[in-house]
Amino acid sequence: MPHLDDEDPRADPLTAPAERPESRPAGVRRAPDLKRRSRLAGEASAAAAEVESALDVRRDPTTAAFFDVDNTLMQGASIFHFALGLHRREFFTTRQILGAAWKQAYFRFAGVEDPEHVADARSSALGFIAGHTVGELESLGEEIFDEAMAAKIWPGTRALAQMHLDEGQRVWLVTAAPIEIATIIARRLGLTGALGTVAEHVDGVYTGRLVGELLHGPAKREAVVALAEREGLDLARCSAYSDSANDLPLLELVGDPCAINPDARLRAHARARGWRTRDYRTGRKAARAGLLVGATAGAVTGAVAAGVALRGVRR
Image (tube, rainbow, N blue to C red; front, side, top):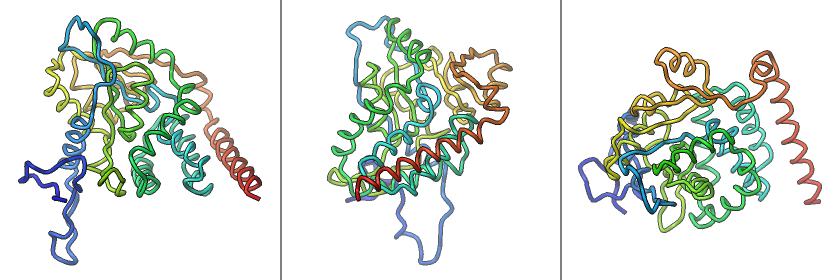
């Protein structure tokens, strides 16, 4: 299998590893080229994206809307809901899900994407899919969407997406979640398609490595630029929706950005730029006043209870 290299246009971005560690002298560790990895992640995501629901008649094929998923379209983190579903199917231990429960509670109530949490999510996600097949995760993803994700969709954001569809525009999800999960969500909601993190796989089996980086921050911008070129979109006439200041590279790329359930930094930025803002959360002030600790404790307690119950069933 060929390695991915800037000088090798024949390389397949869906199956080739993102680095060539064997090409470096022993004992020498090259600093990661984040810009290159972001570009690689974006291009791989755009290449892997497939149209799930194309409109028969489009009023303007050059316009589209792009929606972040976690805390924008869906309450909490989609990867957590997926991981919890895999935990129920004994893919990994209760101890591992406890750490994920803490990050989920923090993300849900604080509304902040911690870079360390993002990095942890990357390594955890790769760990639990390595050795499994693409078909297996897609099948499980369908089940887990029905049992854990469908009820977490924000009705307000879903209505905004439908508004764009009704106007004859295409609607794409753009998320750090694995592209397989993102595609399932898009298909179930009747959206056009999805851009997501691309995990390397060989002969349909995941290797535990990513193509580039997580589709996060600048990588989302790269993915949308690549998709726009492929689909003939005029980004100045497109819309984008996100909850996080981490997505400013994407929001500033389009002519119509909108902050949904924004974190403090994005809210301030949107206010200064005159962007639209929508907030579909409830109890935000109470969470800021101190319910984060209680909510986190509840999430962890629930995970412990689930683990105890699981062990009891096994006995």
